[in-house]
Structure formats: C-alpha cells, structure tokens
Image (cartoon, rainbow, N blue to C red; front, side, top):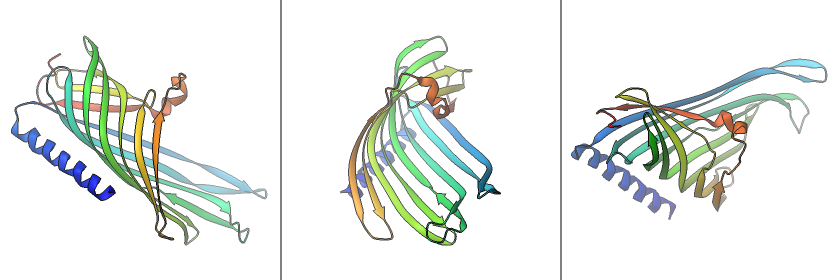
Amino acid sequence: MLANSKKRIINILVILTVHFVSVNAQFFVEGSVGAQYWGGSSSLDGNIKDNPSSYSLNVSPLMGYRLNENVSLGVRTTFLRNTRRFIYPDPDTGDEVLWERKSPGWSLAAFDRYKLWGAKKFSLLVESSIYMSEYNQVEKRGSATTQNLTHSAIGINAFPLISCDLSERFSITFSTDFLRLDLYTLTENNKDTGKKTKNAHFEFNGQSTILNSLSEIRIGIIYHFKKSGK
C-alpha cells in the first residue's frame, strides 16, 4: 500500500512538472537552507574530554507558478543531514567510547499556497501539501552499529507563512511550526531485526508562546521569472 501511494504521488508530481512547462504562467523558484553547529567538552571522573562537534543541515529547493494573485502551485524537495557525536561510557564495559548518530533523509511534496491577506509588500499565506519522506537513523558505539532504522512517511500538512516583496523579482518568506497541522502515516523498519511498525499521527502546534520556537523559523528566498503583480 505504501509503495502504491508513493507511485501516485510521483505521478502527480510528474504531471504538475509537465504542466509547468506547457502553460504560460508566472513561474517562481524558491530556496531555503538551514544549518546548526555545536561543540564543547565533556567531563567524566574529573577528566575533561573534548566533545566532538555535531551539525545538522537541510536544503530545500522549490519550483512553482502563480495561477492568479491569490493561488500558487508547486513542488518541493528537501534534503536533510544530521550528525551528532558524543563521548559516553559504554554500558557493557564502562569504558569511554565515541557514540555517533546519523540521520540523513529527504522529502518530496506537491503544494499549494493561498493568500489570505495582502497589503503593499506583505502577504499572509497558508500553504498545504501532500508529501512523502524518508530518513535513516544509524547509531554507532565505537565501531559497532547498535541501531539501524528507516522511517518512511506519507501525509498532508498545512501552515501559515508571511511573504515580503523585496523587489519586482525577489521576495522573502518566513514560517515556523506555530499553528502547523500535520496528518501522516509513519512506517518504521528495523533493518537489524526486519521488524516493521506502522502508526498514524495527528499533530497540531497551537503553542501561544511563539518566542519559544524562534529556532524553528524558516526563511526562504523567492525569484519571480515575471513581475510579482502585486
């Protein structure tokens, strides 16, 4: 069933891409990049040890076109890389070992955007999409792999975002997880044991203290092939 759903989504994305080329519409491309880095030191039994640095990176290119002043359609793909390394005592031997956790992944989505409100250069939009994603979670303790999981998801989501026109060709978008709605099916495959589990999830972030989620702000840059028309 998961494979058939993936095929349907891929067919939809192919049809949309062909349609992009065949119609005279207002094309735009958008790209966003997020990165995080941290490092420091750890101490065990009074001995200070360097804590190897860790990082995360996500790149999300997008292509779309505007049907009119209020509605846009498009496709988006996202690539994720997350690596975390830390020193921790081995639960079996008690010796200090290097633990490493990697979570590479990707997602593919077909989306639409609808303008709820606009004034001069600013617009309030709502974006909804149907998507599929996959990421691996590999954990190593020393040279031994202790966990090797694959997570696959298919779902729909919706969230608000703000757009600001910088010029006739360029715009910038801002979004967070505040008021984000997500409904998806998650399949977890344990490559070591062959066990598969499947669960349905419903998530809605209605937290009123937006300042607590400032680290989740996403910024995108849009280039319009034609004038924005605002």
